[in-house]
Structures are given as C-alpha cells and as structure tokens.
Length: 324
Ligand SMILES: Nc1ncnc2c1ncn2[C@@H]1O[C@H](COP(=O)(O)OP(=O)(O)OP(=O)(O)O)[C@@H](O)[C@H]1O
Ligand SMILES: [Mg+2]
Image 1: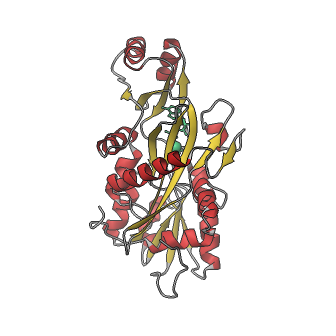
Image 2: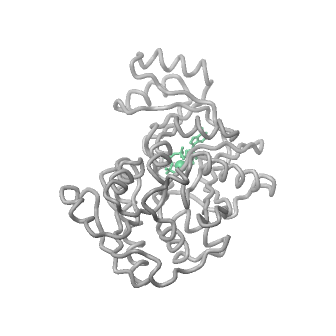
Image 3: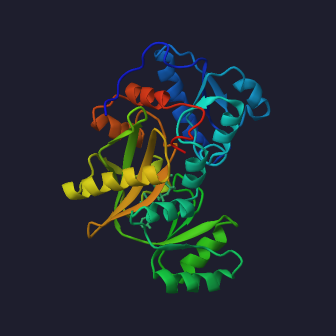
C-alpha cells in the first residue's frame, strides 16, 4: 500500500480539528491538535480548532457546516465512541475508527476478549472486584495470577494509574489508591515494550504495518513518567528477531481487523524475555505529534508526517457500516 498526497478537492471543507477534551490526557491531545492544525494549514485547509472541553456548551453550533472533523484527541469522551456517535448523528465525517471499535478499544477487558477470540495471545488477567474487601481481593488475585501483577484502569491511557504490585500488600495499596476506578490485574510479563502502527487503505482494504517501535526504560515498564520525557530510549525497528517482527505485525493486523478499527490504529505489546508476543491494548486515536510513536514508526517506514496526516484525512467518513 502506498501513501500518496491528497488531490485538491478531495477533502470536504471546512475542516475542524477536535482536540483537548476533559480526559486526563488533555495536555497530550492539545499537543497533537496543535501539530495537526499547523500541518492542515500548510496543506491550505485553514482548519477551525475546536476544544471539546472549552467549546462544550456550543459544540453543536461550532460543528455546524463542518465538512470533516479531524480527531486529534484521546481518552474518555473522545476516544471511546461518544464523540464518534455525536458526529455520526450530526452527519459530520470524522477521522479514525467508528463507534463500536472506539468503545470496545477504550475498554481493555472487552478489547482483550475480542482480540484473544481472534487467536492473538494476551496476558492472563482478571477484573478487580470493588465490592470485595481489598485484602480478600488481593489474596484472590495473587492466588489466580501469582505475583508480581500489573494493576491498571480498564479505561485509561498514558499509563495513568498503572502500578506494578510485587506483594499482596502492594495489590491492596493499588486497589485502595484506585479511588473507585474500574481496575484490572494482569500477570506481569518482563520483556520489551513494543508498539505497532497499522495503516489501512480503505479503497483496496490493504494494510501497511509499520516497523515495531521499542521503548526501553530502566525498570522495563513504559510508565507515565517515561511517556512524558522521563528516562526512555526508543528503537525502531525494535531489537527483536525478524520472526518476532513478523509475529508482531501479523498480530497487530489481526487485532485491528478483529476490533473493526478503520484506517489506522496503534497496538501495544510485550515481547517476553522468551520471545513470546503478547498483545496489551489498542489505541484507536494514538497521539499525532511529529515526534510521537506513530509518526516515528511511519518516518522509519519512509512515510513523512504530512503524508501520515493525509492518509488519516483520506480515511474520514460518516458511516463505517461496511467496516463497522
Ligand atoms: N501485563 C503486563 N506485563 C508487563 N508490562 C506491562 C503489562 N501491562 C502493561 N505493561 C507495561 O505498561 C505499559 C503501558 O500499558 P498499556 O499499554 O496497557 O497502558 P496504556 O496506559 O493504555 O498505554 P497508552 O499510553 O498506550 O494508552 C506497557 O507498554 C508496558 O510497558
Ligand atoms: Mg499502551
């Protein structure tokens, strides 16, 4: 699949960049929004920028007459199908995945179930029962999964709220500090943290899978701090065997299709120390800064940032029924 530039008149105008929002990843969404808006401006599209939070009261008014909404936003209320549903109802074409893939993709437990059903390996795990006493739940989790475990919110990104628990006491601590958040536990698998981008040409339904990107941190966990400029080294392609690259790429496409993602998505994996590939989660609206993970992988594959943005623009539509 080749990524070409846009033909004049191909894009319904005016274009709006939807960014910001009220999720915990708001700051990162705004960074993506700024870079996407600048790029669209250089393409001559004169985008209007809409902040989902600041413009909430007058959102429908601001969307009036918009030909295409470019979603440069992540997290709850935006990446989880709610915004996509609103745009479909208003008849505004938008970028990225549809309502179903967005809603399922935002819920790590639901997404893992579907992806595992398609034959992709995922870490063993369970939901944390908040009705149970934290000590009882910690004992159950330790019995079921062993220790250490990873505890993370079911519907969050950016490694926000993610903890590694080495003892039952750590599990209790993580449950209590989760502040009622829906949490899940997974077996902690030491290994390399690797991300894989998938771009799909909707006209031909062919996928282009980008070279896997590895994030190396001192403790092996691609944490909140590492994602925000902390101690982290990136390698693209990832430092894994060619067979492992192929397995990562195949599993990323399988997950993309099983979840009914649309023109692009980014999948996070652990490659265990024994070389096993385990799918962790999908990002249906991955960060879109020039130096972000998706742009980094695209660049290594010879796709300039402007062409990546053009690909995403070209995938915009109102109704994804054919692709779900
Ligand atoms: N079961 C696990 N075993 C080992 N490491 C894990 C596990 N789950 C998560 N991690 C580590 O935590 C990181 C973040 O996990 P994950 O991708 O599930 O969370 P996220 O917050 O949704 O990420 P994103 O910022 O991509 O939205 C992973 O890249 C990996 O380094
Ligand atoms: Mg992730």
